[in-house]
Amino acid sequence: MENFIETKRIPTCWILSDGTIGMELQSIALAEALDLNYEKKIIKPYWLNRILPTLANFPGIPLAAEAGEILSLPTPNILITCGRRHAGASIALKRRSKNLTYTIHIQDPRINSKHFDLLIIPEHDPSRGSNIITSKGSLNRITPSLLENEARLFIKETQTLKGKKVAVNIGGNTKNHTIDHIMIKKLVVSLNQFSIDNNCSLMITTSKRSNRLLQQELCSLTRNPNIIVWTSGEPNPYLGFLGIADSVIVTSDSINMISEACSTGKPVYIFPFGKDSKRRSNFIQSMETAGIARYFNGKSENWDYEPLNETKRIAIIIKNRLKAENII
Image 1 (spheres, rainbow, N blue to C red):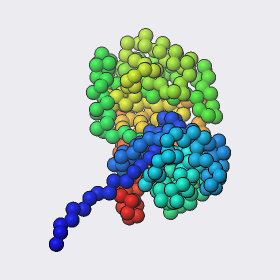
Image 2: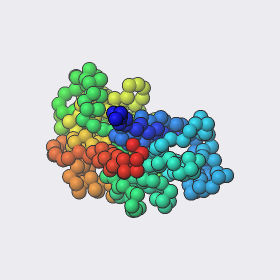
Image 3: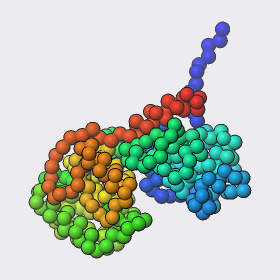
């Protein structure tokens, strides 16, 4: 009798992205946690699919306004998408695959979950169903080993800082709210006073949503030798600062940034910044209730908590489902 060696099936996986970093990183985080060899495919979502994603079920509706090479390639075994703007493309590609592609969508697309094989939504969103997995906040790539490796890259830049080191992650304008000069001034004054009162150092990073005035005002803080500010250029020290930090201050305008901060296991202070949506407010309240984060009050405090590790937890659930359906 011949001896057969069982070989592990290696599925193909695509991530669809229009270049929006926050959504793209969630898809990448999940693909990595699933140990999938993924390919990132850049598309420009078709405008009608963005408005009414379910129209993508019909043959006359294109997968995307600009789909690049993907229309000439065999469809993948697994597709990961994130955000409502990519929901239509996911539906269209599954139709093109004759329902063979297993679709995983992140964030609530605000359409019936039956259009996807799996839907991952934050627990503070209302949708529920047999193919829905809820997460506490956003999926991300934060792990102790990642932070340790990134921290090594920025030891030199931070070695002269005195006292406890605090990573400060700044967002900015959102779809529904613009940060004005009053909020910027309050933030800058509060951060400087926090550094002085608590004899600690601040390692500040901004985001693509941080406007020029915000960046300029933050850079003025570097008159304090215990404050460093990064606004642009490579390498980006965001992850390195999180790894080096003893605690984290993050503005309230981004669930992604708050989720990443809460995945470090370090004390997290949330600085109110603009008008929070009900969804963000509910999420922040859940982090408070869980003893993970506190609103910024100008004091440096210490507390312990079990860091968020939602990406790993959810990846285990998905792997079991993929194995059950003989996809991996």
